[in-house]
Image (cartoon, rainbow, N blue to C red; front, side, top):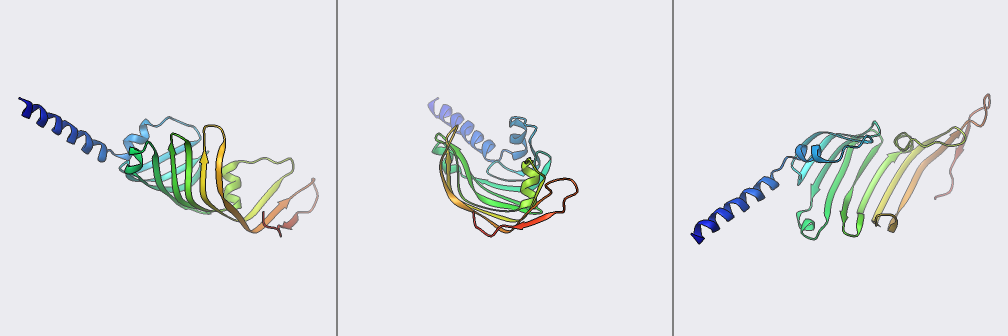
Length: 183
């Protein structure tokens, strides 16, 4: 009798492990909380190794997202993703993102984006009409945040070929100013 109970328990455990291992990412995406700002579409693969071919933020396309979930970190109480964002004109990124008991974290994140793309994604408003041009390069070695504050941030942001265009008043000619200093 004990032998049968053990076999049934082992079979059920093996079935659950297999079901979780091969769980389609498209099923998991349907369980995520619905948000009007973020759209994740055309999902393929598993939760461990998957891809979304249509990622959008506030109606703006971010391109495709590829991820690998680190199973070892789950045993440590963390959700740890190696992620890569690619395919959108003027935007690419890759790095390690996660969440644990201490909050959100990111390591070795490298992102490149055009200033125009960042302005479109952020929907910034200024007291005078401004347009930005150039290429932004972000390198974050380490980031840690708890629920309310940034605890650690080690990285740099470079803005190459920086241009700020402004129109101060109706009828004024456009001004073109080049940033000479590194921020």
